[in-house]
Image (cartoon, rainbow, N blue to C red; front, side):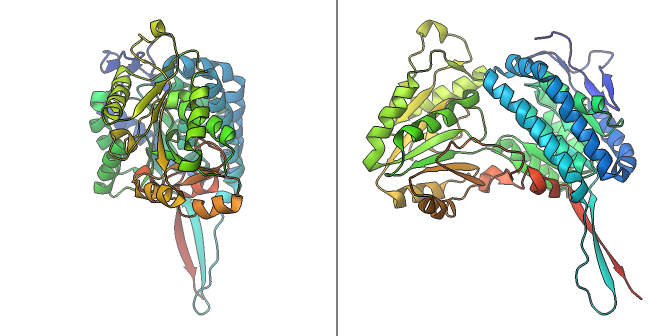
Amino acid sequence: MESRITPLVIDNQEILHPSGERVASDPSPFQGVTDDLAIQAVESCASAFPDWSATSPVERRSLLNKAAEILESRSEDFIQCMQEEIRAPRVFAEFNVRTGVDFLREYAALTTDALAGTIPVSHGESYALVFKEPLGVILAIAPWNAPIILGLRSIAAPLAAGNTVVFKGSELSPRTHFLVSTLFKDAGFPPGVVNYVLHRAEDAASVYETMINHRAVRKCNFTGSTNVGRIIASKAALALKPVLLELGGKNCALVLEDADIEKAAKQIIDGSTLNNGQICMSTDLVLAIDAIHDKLVSHILALLQQFASPHRVITPSSKRKLNGLIDDARAKGAKIHTASNKSEILGNETDYPATVIEGLTPEMEFFTVESFGPIMGIVRVKDEAEAMDLIQQSSYGLSAAVFTASHFRALQLARKIPAGAIHVNSMTVHDEATLPHGGHGDSGWGRFGAKWGLEEFLQTRTVILNP
């Protein structure tokens, strides 16, 4: 990992505070933004907005496609940086690059259709014209756990619609998010169209309030935890600013008695451990019908023992949280199974073995708390009705999976599961640039992805023509 300080980027210029003020050092050095620099970033975007919003969709499409080409050409730099910063497995870093390219190209393809208006029926001899227009300056806040995908989708959709963006990266992935921001400058986006800021953890509240209360900021999109999402939404509400929120999940997999057990076990364990279980869509809960419960557990535990090395979570505090959830489940009667990693390599403060909680019950903390680690809990249920009752009690609603031989049965259940996406015979982790992505309930509101994501950053204007 490079030791140089990751800068802010405003007006396509890298910025380091000359006095060294607000430079953070953990996990890697970066320049934290001051309130004055935060205002400068917003006002730079505001100044760039009139010209940028007037550019033709064809030009915006060309620039987004150029950014995609640059990302492809620099893929190895992005992969290595992501592996070093957040300890991502290479396969997940590669997926981030591929999907990031897809997002850029999908939004590029949509630019020419994004602003298409309508002529609805109106009274008398008048004609009503409904135009779609960009909002203005968008505050985009992306997390560390899939920094390329989540960073790019927070920026590309607003840009495609003609907005300008202040991109607030994560203090846990400052360098990867810096690389994301440079794609737009190097692709030829004008100064001020995309500005990049970071802040130290202790400055989060002040910096966010400074930006969301600025009159030029018209909307915020945020991906992160439900707890922080509540703060983001409440502060934005006081400023009368809309927000797009993609928050946490307690994602479940329902395995019915007619399921392919071997396939279900493989998909479940992959969904639980991919990127060390640190994905908003990671499989936390498994609801297994009594008739196939023991067979499913046996298959899952066999796969669990195939992990030769431990997983690694992002911070020591993450490990402490996971240990607390496991201790609570064990104390309340659950059986804990872990991958047979060598004990001598589990001493690192962020190492964590893939873990299965057998005999999970609603009384255990893990049943309702998003773990964000390589852990799953298996719940034995009598039948489909009991399983659906438990699913519908959850306050979260991001992703779910149903394993069954009957697609018609799966579709019937999918219509009843309160989640943004339901995957039949596949893991809960799934993201494509052509699909809407978002949740219900405590998992947020609004949608990223494709035309649904683009609509989030447009407003309408009605002009009525009279004789």
